[in-house]
Length: 196
Image 1 (tube, rainbow, N blue to C red):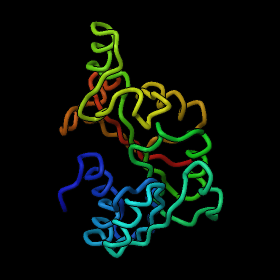
Image 2: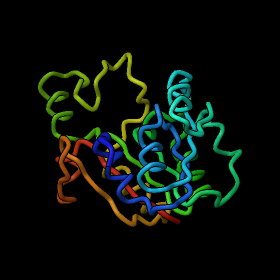
Image 3: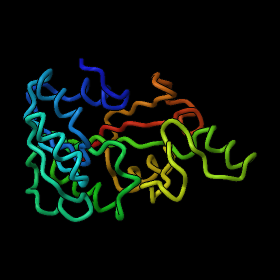
Image 4: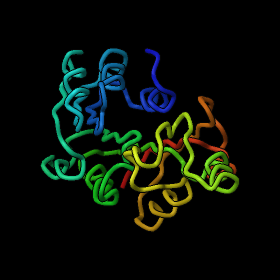
């Protein structure tokens, strides 16, 4: 596989070859390119940032500029095998609506996000009294696009309450996989494979 960010590598390795994929918040298209080139997927993208859209299109990818909060409603039901939302959930205005659309549009949804309950975040708040700046949360509170500070346990409770099935989940500490045991405390990042 092409060198991808660890969460994207997990996603790429777990998408069935030849699948139809919508990558929402696709950035510069790194995941889409890997899915196309190495898994034979028909990958499409939706991205808000025009610079990233131009970069992805420059790679020969099918990406349109759009907003997950408003534009997912335009996609027909069951039009993709996978709808992917990587490190974008916490930046959306209405994450519950976005998740509903992902599960309507795709047979499966893949969602990844930084865990705001990771021990380093807790320590930063406890001892320093300030919002943390870490490798996965690299900007100060006033510059961050993150508007919903979700934790792994918050997300688990949400999908359970909504009757959404978690087919698989992966948890990352640094760039390494870690066990599900105490993931809310130990994992910096989570990846969930979901279906209705």
